[in-house]
Image (cartoon, rainbow over all chains, first blue to last red; front, top):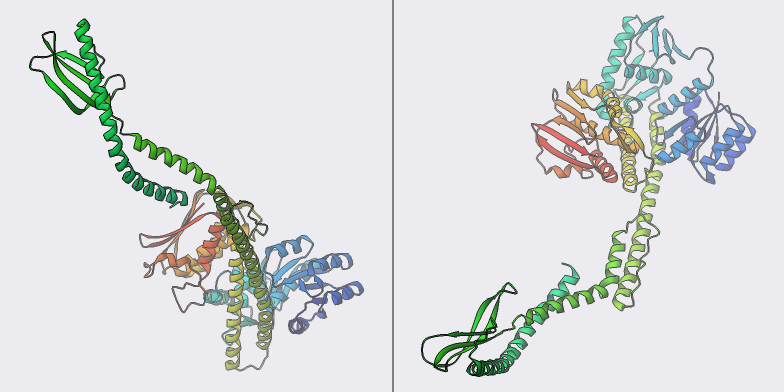
Length: 225
Length: 401
């Protein structure tokens, strides 16, 4: 799975690259408009992450080039402008998703995985982690092949954690993923805690293992102990 | 006070005083001459009447100017008095000068009175006409000024093409227009620069923050972190999130104030409210709030979707956050207004402060206190009215469309 990261901030590119590589992606980077143009005209990618504010040209212009040369690629737009105009324009021009800077790495990962799933639809759209199976189309979750009944938020949290498995996910990242950034994060910490508690209970009832590890009291990690 | 009224008033006052002084002098001189003449005239009238009676014995009568009647008594010389008489043909009471005498003609005694009206209202008439002449003149002179004023009323800091068009050949007005023109252009350029600065600053802050946050998140992934280290990283992480949220909110406020949300469509508030109630489900259950909703279905309003969404999230978030456990949480909506209320103790501060930027009721809260400022800006932009009142132990926020 090959990803092209087009982003002018070198420090950020480095961190994103490392994070995505640890998720098993193959990453290439481009830091200017011209570099991006060169990479796009020579290679083909599965996913392209595009920062709209680039030195040497407007990021929106690159969308046309991507649609010409890399029609199959999933396109995720990143922008520091939390501006609806850019978002609408970008999505109209054929971008698949939009994320605003600054973002949680876990959120970026979740968006990319979702894009990958949409692109490579091979019969069943499922996520599997040992005895846990999540059917993303139907929103059903199975433990050892027996279905468990989850609320929408429990489902969202579980999916988010499984997508970011083996990573420490902060409570803030979970809060923003589930409730958006409209209300202050700390108000939601108690709710996250109770949703996780319920999740644990429901999984254990079907004799699933507890993979929901509380880490340092600051977040969660979905992993085998 | 209007300039025109002021000049008129001053002008009238000074003229009135001058008129009174000059008038008094002229009045006494003139009235002396006039009355003397009038008396002479009336006396000669009486003489004429007397001769005419002596000649043919008929008694002439032209009321109220001439009155002749037979009386008993002795002859009496001229008596001059001022009197008022109800004048039938004009249906009003008019002051008259009357000269009368009692004379004997052919053995009979007659009372003969000759009268002439006295004119005192000339003075008032003069003042009134002067007032109107002056007013008309002033309006003409001040016209360019009012035109400039009207144009200035249309001025808004976000109209880059604004120019004052009015031309006058009067130096003062030309000077005024030139200065105002310079001033408005300066306001516009300064405003644009400030706008660009706020946006650029916010963007420029977001990128370093994104770097900091991603580095801190990466650090948290190290498997052998000590609890203490993790807490330090998390603390830095939490605060960097707060800065980024703060700058994003400020940017949003600036954008609302600049009317940078032009896209409008019919937004179904009824559906949006139902959706948000689900969104706040955890908070409502967590605090055991008693939710009462009175939402008229199919209520829509022509506005920007993002702003309507923001308004509702902020009002409802505010209500669930500040309401007491087991308290009431009411939402009502119809075509005219949206009311969101929650139980709570009355405020110890003036309620209009609620909508101020960075005003926090709870100083230790990690929210910057911008939610209601956003609500206010959105209402202002859409020309809706936002009001707050405390009634039946409820904090009520009402948006009138």
